[in-house]
Picture 1 (cartoon, rainbow, N blue to C red):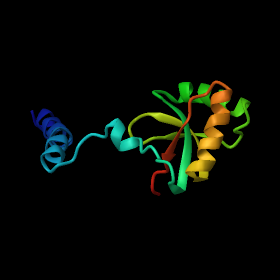
Picture 2: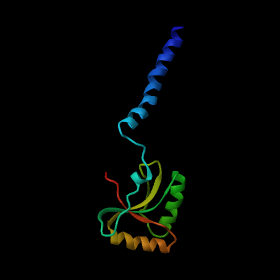
Picture 3: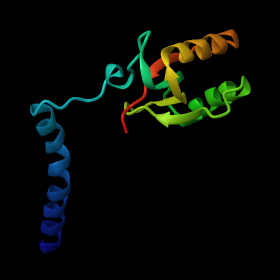
Picture 4: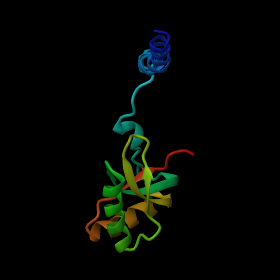
Length: 123
């Protein structure tokens, strides 16, 4: 009887916080990230730390396939990154101005890709 009581107490100690955390977080105003939280499309005239994002995929394997296509048309420094919303993005970082990004995006579209210029996440 003592062993089963110990197991029950241990299970409650582990499970209770797992069940309580989402309810407390949502009550306090937290929310699960949405696409709007992860995609910040740059506007003409913006400068600073911008990225050329070639697409988002649900799995790393899918993102790696897109990465191969992106690199095959000349974006050798492109990479796969987590986007913070449980997806994987293929990104070319370090675009210094919207105009530079627009020029690169036009070249990529000519090769059959569909990039967009985004504001790089902080950090």
